[in-house]
Length: 138
Image 1 (cartoon, rainbow, N blue to C red):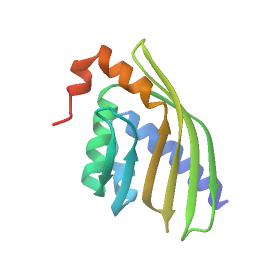
Image 2: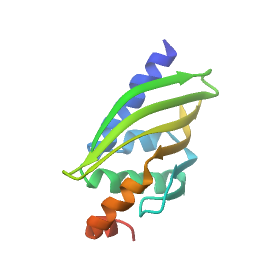
Image 3: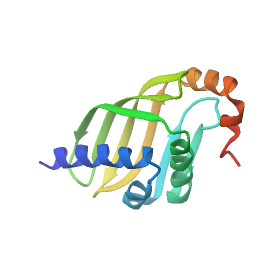
Image 4: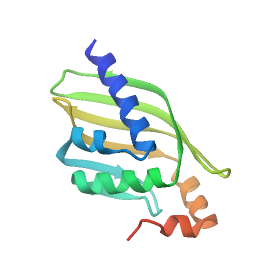
């Protein structure tokens, strides 16, 4: 039951983020949440705290991505919950990617998010769309 509720909450949270409403995810994040996005691109970095997480999520949502979760796996007790999810995302007609994320939760609070995806795809897209890559990076 607990795992099913967590998986459902994860799906809801991502739908809200993509809709430009990251408040639920930010509210459920720990004050010291750590979010890591890999690569050599304008999205890359390790972001600490709710404010940095919210900024990143709002920037992502501003691109009107299509984000689809394919599978969510939940393991562990409420004080040490691990979540892995697979996803695909698209922006416009020329960006498509697939990846996975690893999350850690403690008593329902999001502690850690690590994203794994093809970063060369993002880099190539940014080369084709420098105006979008620059938007929101200041």
